[in-house]
Image 1 (tube, rainbow, N blue to C red):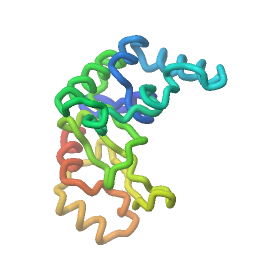
Image 2: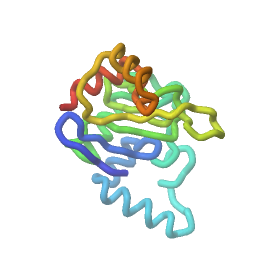
Image 3: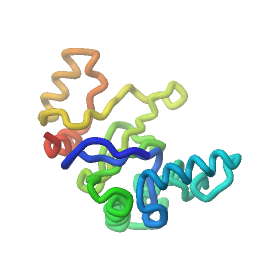
Length: 167
Protein backbone atom coordinates (compact mmCIF):
# COMPACT_ATOMS: atom_id res chain seq x y z
CA UNK A 1 0.00 0.00 0.00
CA UNK A 2 1.11 3.56 -0.63
CA UNK A 3 -0.36 7.02 -0.11
CA UNK A 4 0.38 9.60 -2.79
CA UNK A 5 -0.79 13.08 -3.74
CA UNK A 6 -2.01 15.96 -1.65
CA UNK A 7 -5.18 17.70 -0.60
CA UNK A 8 -8.35 16.37 -2.21
CA UNK A 9 -6.18 14.12 -4.40
CA UNK A 10 -4.42 12.33 -1.52
CA UNK A 11 -4.96 8.67 -2.40
CA UNK A 12 -4.28 5.34 -0.73
CA UNK A 13 -3.28 2.81 -3.40
CA UNK A 14 -3.78 -0.83 -2.45
CA UNK A 15 -3.96 -4.07 -4.39
CA UNK A 16 -7.55 -5.06 -3.52
CA UNK A 17 -8.96 -3.24 -0.48
CA UNK A 18 -8.09 -2.71 3.18
CA UNK A 19 -10.82 -3.73 5.62
CA UNK A 20 -11.54 -1.41 8.52
CA UNK A 21 -10.53 -4.12 11.01
CA UNK A 22 -7.11 -4.40 9.33
CA UNK A 23 -6.69 -0.61 9.14
CA UNK A 24 -7.52 -0.22 12.84
CA UNK A 25 -5.21 -3.08 13.80
CA UNK A 26 -2.16 -1.56 12.11
CA UNK A 27 -3.00 2.16 12.26
CA UNK A 28 -0.66 3.25 9.46
CA UNK A 29 0.34 2.30 5.95
CA UNK A 30 3.93 1.79 7.10
CA UNK A 31 2.98 -0.73 9.81
CA UNK A 32 0.59 -2.52 7.45
CA UNK A 33 3.33 -2.83 4.80
CA UNK A 34 5.82 -4.12 7.38
CA UNK A 35 3.35 -6.79 8.51
CA UNK A 36 2.59 -7.87 4.92
CA UNK A 37 6.33 -8.15 4.18
CA UNK A 38 6.85 -10.22 7.34
CA UNK A 39 4.03 -12.59 6.42
CA UNK A 40 5.39 -13.02 2.90
CA UNK A 41 8.85 -13.72 4.34
CA UNK A 42 7.26 -16.36 6.60
CA UNK A 43 6.49 -18.38 3.47
CA UNK A 44 3.16 -16.72 2.89
CA UNK A 45 1.68 -17.60 6.24
CA UNK A 46 -0.60 -15.00 7.84
CA UNK A 47 -4.04 -13.45 7.85
CA UNK A 48 -2.99 -10.48 5.70
CA UNK A 49 -2.39 -12.91 2.84
CA UNK A 50 -5.77 -14.60 3.30
CA UNK A 51 -7.50 -14.92 -0.10
CA UNK A 52 -10.88 -13.91 1.34
CA UNK A 53 -10.11 -11.10 3.77
CA UNK A 54 -6.53 -9.85 3.24
CA UNK A 55 -5.75 -6.50 1.58
CA UNK A 56 -4.19 -8.26 -1.41
CA UNK A 57 -7.42 -10.11 -2.18
CA UNK A 58 -10.50 -8.57 -0.52
CA UNK A 59 -13.04 -7.30 -3.05
CA UNK A 60 -15.87 -6.27 -0.72
CA UNK A 61 -15.73 -2.55 -1.49
CA UNK A 62 -15.91 -3.09 -5.22
CA UNK A 63 -18.57 -5.78 -4.89
CA UNK A 64 -20.47 -5.03 -1.67
CA UNK A 65 -23.34 -7.45 -2.34
CA UNK A 66 -20.89 -10.34 -2.67
CA UNK A 67 -19.53 -9.36 0.75
CA UNK A 68 -23.09 -9.42 2.15
CA UNK A 69 -23.34 -5.69 2.73
CA UNK A 70 -25.16 -2.70 1.32
CA UNK A 71 -23.46 -0.03 -0.75
CA UNK A 72 -23.79 2.48 2.09
CA UNK A 73 -22.07 0.10 4.51
CA UNK A 74 -19.17 -0.43 2.12
CA UNK A 75 -18.79 3.32 1.55
CA UNK A 76 -18.84 4.05 5.27
CA UNK A 77 -16.19 1.39 5.84
CA UNK A 78 -13.95 2.77 3.06
CA UNK A 79 -14.04 6.21 4.73
CA UNK A 80 -13.31 4.75 8.16
CA UNK A 81 -10.45 2.57 6.85
CA UNK A 82 -8.88 5.61 5.19
CA UNK A 83 -9.13 7.53 8.45
CA UNK A 84 -7.53 4.69 10.41
CA UNK A 85 -4.56 4.25 8.03
CA UNK A 86 -3.93 7.84 6.95
CA UNK A 87 -6.37 10.56 8.04
CA UNK A 88 -5.14 12.82 5.23
CA UNK A 89 -6.09 10.30 2.49
CA UNK A 90 -9.32 11.21 0.73
CA UNK A 91 -9.82 8.11 -1.40
CA UNK A 92 -8.73 4.53 -1.92
CA UNK A 93 -7.63 3.30 -5.34
CA UNK A 94 -7.82 -0.45 -5.82
CA UNK A 95 -6.94 -3.06 -8.39
CA UNK A 96 -7.77 -6.78 -8.34
CA UNK A 97 -11.43 -5.96 -9.03
CA UNK A 98 -11.82 -6.17 -12.79
CA UNK A 99 -14.32 -3.64 -14.12
CA UNK A 100 -15.11 -2.80 -17.77
CA UNK A 101 -13.62 0.70 -17.43
CA UNK A 102 -11.87 2.83 -14.81
CA UNK A 103 -14.64 3.89 -12.48
CA UNK A 104 -15.45 5.02 -8.97
CA UNK A 105 -17.92 4.35 -6.20
CA UNK A 106 -18.87 6.00 -2.94
CA UNK A 107 -18.95 9.50 -4.38
CA UNK A 108 -15.37 9.19 -5.65
CA UNK A 109 -13.93 7.82 -2.38
CA UNK A 110 -13.22 4.45 -4.04
CA UNK A 111 -11.49 4.29 -7.44
CA UNK A 112 -11.62 0.97 -9.31
CA UNK A 113 -8.61 0.83 -11.60
CA UNK A 114 -8.29 -2.79 -12.82
CA UNK A 115 -9.81 -3.02 -16.29
CA UNK A 116 -8.40 -6.44 -17.13
CA UNK A 117 -5.90 -5.10 -19.66
CA UNK A 118 -4.12 -8.44 -19.81
CA UNK A 119 -4.76 -10.45 -22.95
CA UNK A 120 -5.99 -13.19 -20.60
CA UNK A 121 -8.98 -10.98 -19.76
CA UNK A 122 -9.43 -9.24 -23.10
CA UNK A 123 -9.66 -5.77 -21.57
CA UNK A 124 -8.73 -2.56 -23.33
CA UNK A 125 -5.87 -0.27 -22.23
CA UNK A 126 -6.94 2.34 -19.70
CA UNK A 127 -5.33 4.61 -17.14
CA UNK A 128 -6.43 6.87 -14.35
CA UNK A 129 -5.05 10.39 -14.46
CA UNK A 130 -4.87 11.73 -10.94
CA UNK A 131 -5.05 15.49 -10.69
CA UNK A 132 -5.54 16.29 -14.37
CA UNK A 133 -7.49 19.41 -15.27
CA UNK A 134 -11.25 18.83 -15.33
CA UNK A 135 -12.72 18.04 -18.72
CA UNK A 136 -16.21 17.11 -19.79
CA UNK A 137 -16.98 13.55 -20.94
CA UNK A 138 -17.46 14.92 -24.47
CA UNK A 139 -13.98 16.50 -24.40
CA UNK A 140 -12.50 13.21 -23.16
CA UNK A 141 -14.20 11.33 -26.00
CA UNK A 142 -13.00 13.85 -28.58
CA UNK A 143 -9.44 13.62 -27.28
CA UNK A 144 -9.49 9.82 -27.34
CA UNK A 145 -10.82 9.83 -30.89
CA UNK A 146 -8.35 12.46 -32.07
CA UNK A 147 -5.15 10.91 -30.68
CA UNK A 148 -4.84 7.11 -30.29
CA UNK A 149 -2.20 7.57 -27.59
CA UNK A 150 -4.97 8.99 -25.45
CA UNK A 151 -6.89 5.73 -25.59
CA UNK A 152 -5.48 5.44 -22.08
CA UNK A 153 -7.82 8.19 -20.84
CA UNK A 154 -10.67 7.36 -18.45
CA UNK A 155 -13.92 6.43 -20.14
CA UNK A 156 -16.61 7.34 -17.63
CA UNK A 157 -18.27 10.70 -17.01
CA UNK A 158 -18.01 10.01 -13.26
CA UNK A 159 -14.22 10.02 -13.52
CA UNK A 160 -14.29 13.43 -15.19
CA UNK A 161 -16.40 14.69 -12.27
CA UNK A 162 -14.09 13.09 -9.70
CA UNK A 163 -11.04 14.67 -11.28
CA UNK A 164 -12.55 18.13 -11.00
CA UNK A 165 -11.92 17.94 -7.24
CA UNK A 166 -8.18 17.52 -7.77
CA UNK A 167 -6.33 20.69 -8.81
